[in-house]
Image (cartoon, rainbow, N blue to C red):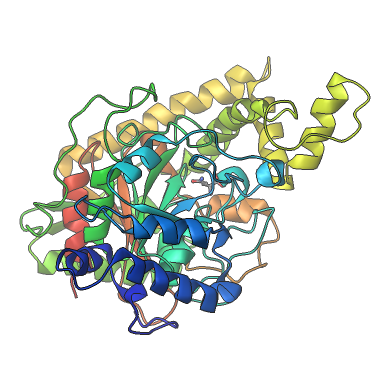
Length: 474
Ligand code: GLN
């Protein structure tokens, strides 16, 4: 896709290309960060991807980068809900914007540092990752570099925009109901949500703990494989982290898709699907068929309940997770509370934005006595049915392919009712409810960017990336 910021600087390169140049001694890490910082200062005013960026620290890290390591000297941007020691971690919220500095490194940050990566800027996001447009950020707006005037998607909109604008070759995002895949689709980059438990959640500020996963956002599938290789793996500090060996995501990447059976779930092509999205998705399917895959129609019959199920379970978990923001321990504290109860109330009233309050109210309601069985417990049962839909489908097919979102990025400021955005999560949410891996890979389109969602069985990331690579081939 032509990029509005095209230039021949190192900011145009993938991680793989940069590593190649570094290993041949053709460039240094300082050359890379100089180009990325120049690209960022030239265009960040129009984009607004970063909430903070410490150029001096980045330059100092580049000067002493260990190029012998797998990501030695490679800059990676970080979504602002992943803790890295001494850095801000605002979660896009006024609650944490003023005073909070991370006292520790998240699991993925330890892995990135061990691999030699350089932490670049911290990216904008919907407040506490609640949203699909980055318009719920309490701190700033982010524009879509691939479609100016349009939302970058969300909640990892700053990460997607930073990668699309060539500020960084890659970024980390987090995905609870689509927040890596949907902004990747809207900005024309690759975004992968790993299987639940494959990547450590330690140090990711929790939104809905049974759904959250951190994952890579890159410009190529190969880079997504490389970054996933670095951040995957067991972490004893996350009790839901799986004690499994990490597959090799790179060696089989180019093996092709010959003989694979690809399922097309009919429920994902329902009324309301934008014709451009449908056409692009079917062109993606055709590309796989040309390379020897077989497409078959399948059914995921409980899809229609997924949005309702998610918008009970995710707020329920959020209302519990966000109770830690009480004005005592982290971030914002009300100035003159009369007593301890008003300290909690005023701090939360002042610190949280409207969407976060809405989710806390929803979550508290569905967990309260008398409603727990009617809503929360029922939603857990439907979640099991949705997971079984996928298990049954994977008896018939190796992978499932679908749209990421029913329409391309809408214009900024054009959502009048939060329900509109909730409903647009219909293609991504079931994957989180089932704990499966999925990727959004850009499709060749002439208009607004559109991604193809590929879903595989649990822990089949190697196969997922192989199929994505076949779609990506020009
Ligand atoms: N759009 C969904 C929500 O608002 C998903 C967010 C996410 O994945 N963090 O909850």
